[in-house]
Image 1: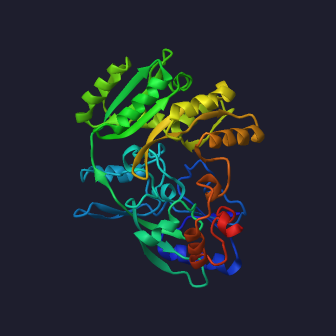
Image 2: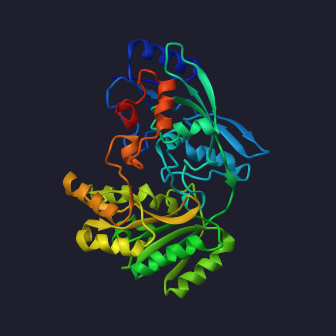
Image 3: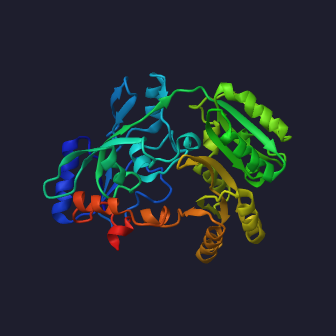
Length: 395
């Protein structure tokens, strides 16, 4: 119904107090780059735009922890950290426009997940400052343990006004493209790279039908499947050796120019989907963690769904183990067939993260997180924050 853009903590507290008094729903919004509808209001009310909370407020040179406001654009944080020889561990493919508060509240992983796992893994989010929604709103600091319940909660259980994050050593990554004509060998190479004693920040694999529809600057497909990697300089020779032993075409593209518009990062994770949908909006996608027999699982799905599913794979780390996540392109044929595909994927052992649903739980592991619900009880007693998105509260 209306929007506000607070510039101070006092403004946030004032808005929270008024909304509590009159029962007005509050939906928090950063730069709006999320693609699950995390910041789309379901019950009207007020949208609180946090982009003026965009300051880097502290960087501890002793433990390399950074404190930022939620409206900071991730690319700006990355530039600042670069001057201290550090970088963020995880970022979405929309990192040049995405705000950090939205990534923590609405994201799960992305570039860097092949090395650092997922956002909810211990060690990434080290603390939060929040404002409560109650008769007399309070500014509260939550340590890493208490902050976990607000990580990937769609802004349903507290107004985030500051975040403390861990960082990693800065690396000048080398961009590498590898073309291969055998799909199963491509998956084997992806697994080999993930399990090798090399430092990699990105490891993506695309079926040739996807490669053919990526932007022209990414290079011609020529009928090949493609792997894209960001590798530390001392790992390049190993990648080249493993690629050539599989009769793949190895291309060293040089040091990453990450602030240019045509980097490998902009071809991976959800940007892959964005590029394909820009050419044909009849495509949608799913997200899943594949079972350990990845190629057999994919082959079984292909027997039924054929050209209606195109495979995009990302190397990730889950519970300390290297795994393969899939973000396949799916031809939209209606809700019934989409749900049938989801059922088929679950039957072969895939864990589904469905981007076509509204709630935190249905888009994730499908289970209610009691910590998220109890935190909402404590900090949002009337359930005004992003109502309809936390299933555990609604049920």
